[in-house]
Length: 236
Image (cartoon, rainbow, N blue to C red; front, side):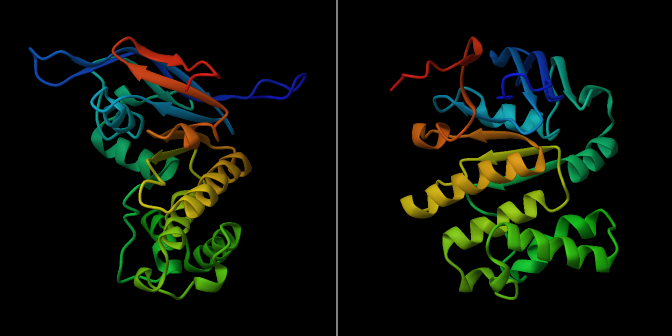
């Protein structure tokens, strides 16, 4: 949340009455979802299995399209973009962190982090500089030339966070990012995610079943059949 007296932060993500169903006769997976996330804001979304958290994440990332309503990233309506434009927007403006890490095992830590910059055509010298800076930011600069098989789960997740942020995305989407980590590594990862969202001024979305994880966010929302709603701060 913005400090009292500070200017309001710009909205990065905005959803208005978003609906999604699978099949013409099936029930709506998401029905009338509204959401606004500002620069540097970190929002946790919780909900039971099957309520549409993964569907929502796919819509936010431009991997799927809403049936109705509007999803805007920095004011750009995703529904007005063709598939090629959506792919380019995703490469430039979205970062992903997953439970299963999804790092490439045959690449070193630095090579994994460099991938988004290669896809965007960033010159090699600039790529090396930005990768080194990002590895230092997540505390694994000494592991730059190691491959995932030589690293712990927590270290691999730090690679994933660095890769998700190295291209300066406007949106960071984290899907159960601590599900495969021990409690100590999970706590460190959650602290790092929050810190990096704030320092990059990204709009951060954390999808989680864990209330402990959710409480590291600025606010907690619950997704159910009625849409998104603020979770009471004292809810168990």
